[in-house]
Length: 470
Image 1 (cartoon, rainbow, N blue to C red):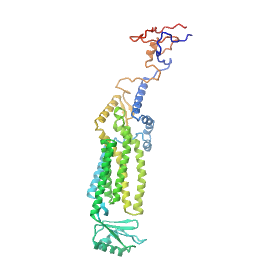
Image 2 (image 1 turned 90 degrees about the vertical axis):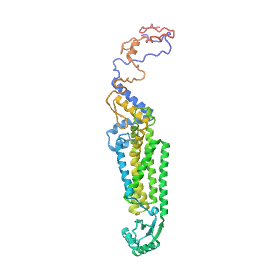
Image 3 (image 1 turned 30 degrees about the vertical axis):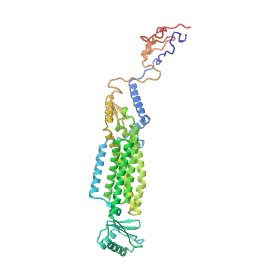
Image 4 (image 1 turned 120 degrees about the vertical axis):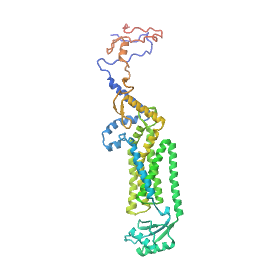
């Protein structure tokens, strides 16, 4: 049988038609091809955002996570929780505890230590093996000088009595009464702090908090943008007010250690917030040029991806603080250690809550006021409605109720493997064959016909004519 070889009259480099599928083998299913085309578009669009590898890698794990238990969903971090959906409830709850904290601060107030309020402090160490009641000590002082002590605390093995500023005669009378009642080793010592000194300490503490807040706002404004910075600053103020309200409710003494602890937990809250913000920024890079996710959906995925990290960080930080509080109250007694541990414990719990349920939701709602983000959200929702697509809280497709892609009723071109013709029937007809028929030996391929044919000056030949073997 003669073997087909290109003749001298054929233009060099003329591409041959794409090979036809073997006879009897069914072609691609149009409906499956349409679904494959949509999936390809989704993956391509996700890859162009810089998160395509994440989207492709999480697809299988998310399907698994939807039917898994709570802790499995939490540990995978694939976006199984709709955290930002009920954010109005978070605002209501946070607003309630903030208002309650402000009312506590106004009507109940704080128990300021001697370093802030000024006054006189008496201190002594009872005999070993002697149990001394703080209530009895307060009664002894009140009976001696007619002044009720502001606080009587057990600090380690020593007893501390704090009261308003006493005169020299009152100090002597109180010391004599305590010596007669308890016969302490080393006697009773006294110290005094003026109200002016306490006022200066309070003023400096307030200035330190305000400077911290200003620096935080400036850093976040430069690192992100004004709407995101506003969400973080509101979150820090939320932590500050709620921590102060709980401290007022408990009634612990406010000391310089309390202020130090407060600044520490504000820094911890800011750290956790910035971690989540960085992930949100990563997920939303190039978001407006695509239609895969809205801004809230990308932010919800970011929270899911960092939620387990936030929980682990908070637990690791809370364990030593809780041990410090137990040691300060149960072992060493009341004092500076207890004040520092309590404010840190409360602040870390409130900060972990606010970084997820206050800072990010508020930043998302403020970003939705941006005209560019608002227009992008409307565009994404309109496309989904036209495509008949239902998504989850992260913008991933969970159901299709209409055409797979494009406008309603518009067919989607099927995917074809590399090297296959886009229209097999047309390719077969151009070669002088029936659609689906096997090629004939020695049949010359068809040449383009029409205005562009034969411009090279060489004969184009006739389709379907066998060539003579040489």
